[in-house]
Every structure is written in C-alpha cells, then in structure tokens.
Image (cartoon, rainbow, N blue to C red; front, side):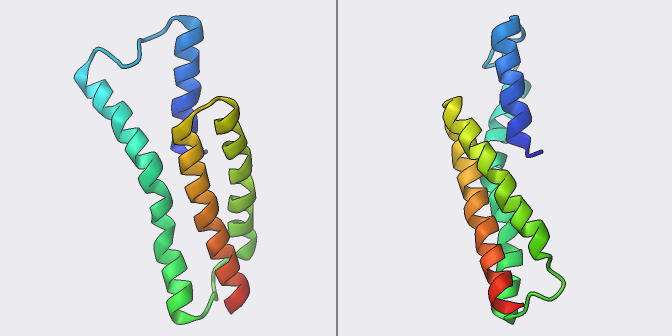
Length: 112
C-alpha cells in the first residue's frame, strides 16, 4: 500500500469520528503531515533509476514485466479513488506512478 493511502484513510476517520484536528495543533505532527504529502509526489521518482538502467543498457534482463505490469494496473484504482474523494494529492501521485510504471513496462517490452 502506498503511503498516501494510509494518510487519506486516517484523514477521513478523523472527520467522521471527531478525532484529532487537521492541521494538527502540534508543530511536529504538522511537519510530518506535510512531509508525507511531499513524499507522495517524490515517491514516484524512485522508479526513474530502473527506467534509466533499462533504456541506457538496452536490456531488461532481471526485471519482471509481470511485477511492473501489476504495479501499473494496481495504480488505476487509486486514481479513481482520488477522483471520487476529490483528493488532488492522491490523483497527482497516482498519475505519476502510472506514467512511470507504464514507461518501465514499455521499456521492458522493448528490450526483453
């Protein structure tokens, strides 16, 4: 499960169960909340080295097309979830993951 999923679920629980306020009154918790939003955007960038390696070496040996295809397919429900709940960070992060995962699948397909 990607980190932003947990964030959103807990945010919805707070709203419906009168839990901790958002933004949180403690500065370190507010910092953590902001950090996780940043990480949701930065997270998809972690796959760029894999894509770069495949494209620069023109070889996809040792890279599983099944795994990357599943990553791609499993991102689609998160995009829908983000739209349904009107959560831009989830939509943006999921779209970035989808683009990266699909690019890796295409690169594997081209060089395997």
